[in-house]
Image (tube, helix red, strand yellow):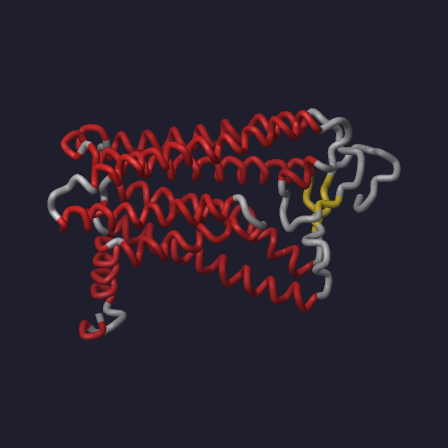
Length: 303
């Protein structure tokens, strides 16, 4: 079954047609090469972060547990969508079973929501570390931060479930063609039969809440952090605090600014996060250099 559903029979599979207007194979091959390169950089960069974290016990602190968790999320989000996009770029279109399509939607929505909550948790971690440093060891232990991260994952998938459940109430008896490169939720919802206006409003409300409630909390946390930092009498202490928070603010800015943009936006944060953390965090840089020295990839004079 593909294209328009003339007989109004229930849809059992979707045809993922890719982006409208990009039909010639040369442009598709170019997109394939670009997305494959970006995907490989995302996987390698985030795996490098995870490897550095697991191999250096001095990094087993709440802040770096969060960084490692973010790297795992970035790998999961891109692996959920990019491989299917690459297949579409090579084959022009592909069919996917009805159930498989909605599973991909649940994972994409759930992982995206989880990343919003995890970034919020990272801001809270920095808030406690700078505004209440004496209470930080008791409030943000490794075990507690791990539990809070688990709550982020559970909450993310709880938020992703209602929109999918509401959409599955509708029959799909029109066209089964998705003008996207993977099972995008908004594109699939438009194919449902019946009045989807109220469902669309509910879905939009949940999506905006998932994005903007954590963002408001993050902004509030960093306003308090900046106020506390300017109170620090030591110039070195102020610089260190701004340096650490600047890394997190850069990651948060990339994620939230790009998340509401064009389709390619949800690939960029996953690519930028390992670059930002490897280049800006002194502890990760030093650990990376020690790992390179131990592996003897380069002579000591080069590192």
